[in-house]
Amino acid sequence: MHMVRYVSRKGSHRLIRTSPFHRRVHPLQFTFYSARVDFHSARVDPYSSKCAGNAMRLRLETDGAAIVRGFLRDEDFGRTAEMAGNAFAFLDSGGGDTSLRETWISVGTIWLTNFEHCVAPELARDLVMLLSREANRTLGLSYLVVKMCSVRRLTNWQRVLQWHTDYHGGGTHPYDPLFNIWLPLTAVGREQPSVELVRGSHRRMRELPPSETGVYTDEWVAEHFPPTDRIAPELAPGDALIFDHLTLHRTQPLDRETVSRMSIECRVTRHPAYLALSQASSQLPGKSPPQPRSPRPRQGVQ
Ligand SMILES: O=C(O)CCC(=O)C(=O)O
Image 1 (cartoon, rainbow, N blue to C red):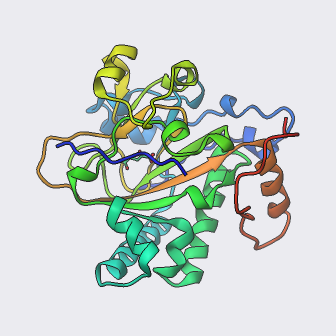
Image 2 (image 1 turned 90 degrees about the vertical axis):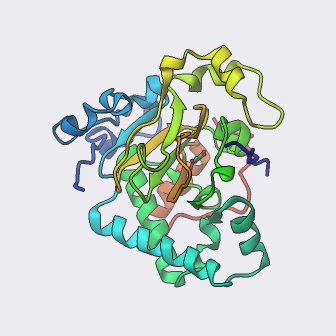
């Protein structure tokens, strides 16, 4: 799989649902982009007035990104953060086989498919079900691509991610349309880096020539997009930043020496073939979404 390279460089429940829209999913008429996910202004105002990124309403359709406050409930967030901390502690103490340790050492992530080797398997399964359920609740019927989800711990500025799209740099193109539900497990945007993205870039990135490496330089981004379109939202634990896999983004650069942050990259497709799988699995009580071993061929898919 073509992955983005790492290039050196220096509480509360405020979930905005797309309901009633997503409760009455009609597969043929469902247009994901008409889903609206944005702020719950009553909870956000005092906080967001200090931050331009948070003060603006974002819409997935036009901005290629949206913020969902309180995507995870406090108790779910607490369990998830604890589990992630335990998984990294397991690796820190020398646990895990070679391939598991390799990904962690080289890029600082644990694939969600490997999570069961770091924590109790039933906890790992619970996490998949939680993410899947919340994705469906927020975005309408969707399908969690577990093998493209990961848990990241960033402890080194050398490991930050440069400008890329998941579509070109992360190998998500077979799942188009796909969204990244980025869940910081630490408050981000001030002390710890958020994700910086270019609003509205998801549309033009379909047309612009892809970079060979999957990474775009700052100069390239400055040449093609106005600096005013860049935002790095402040997010509290439990909030989510959802963005289109064609939205240009990177780790927010912050002028500080140390970094310490955990986050989950949760990738969700609305490809019709996967929606059918998701729908089938939702009719089986207690079943987590089925995971094909490789992307389904697109032939015959409308
Ligand atoms: O965690 C980060 O800083 C960047 C995340 C990212 O680029 C991604 O989820 O694709």
